[in-house]
Image (cartoon, rainbow, N blue to C red; front, side, top):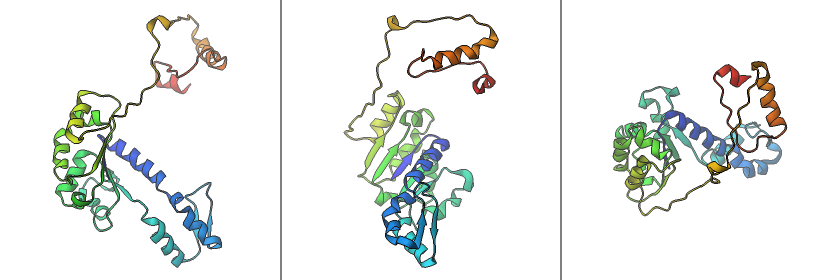
Length: 231
């Protein structure tokens, strides 16, 4: 699978979520079958004590290749794309995460040649921002180096012109899933209040409003400084 997003920060978020999903939790049946040979705390799945090296090799062979993901936009390995090459060739990752420009650089460098034959799923996250951030040309070039048949998924918070443009570019006979929240109330149902109060009493008032449940549902409190947010 290939996942593309408009920023390296989003790439890192997705990679962290993938790591959380693809942890040793997926190997519980294998670990439980080992019995007394391991000590595992399933309340903290990251802790695993293995008593023999051969047992460690068995674990790696059974669980280590369940699914592997690589974030090619992670600059912690360095900005040079060759820093990621060992992670992409040989033991090919199952999921590749990156910005369109970074993915294109690796494709042109020959680090992702396997995508041309093995790609099954393409995900474009924050599709509206991918276009507005100026990645349309990179996306077009990436698409030319992908196989002719694969499943595509576009996610977007808004159906902006950018999202529509990317939809026409990537999808073929798409199924659209609209996740709608409850409709907002009409203006006639809204009431505004203005409370004049001394500076030292403001926080007490806010506390009382929430404590007495006079404010219901989702709430945004606007303040004029960072210090007030922490208070």
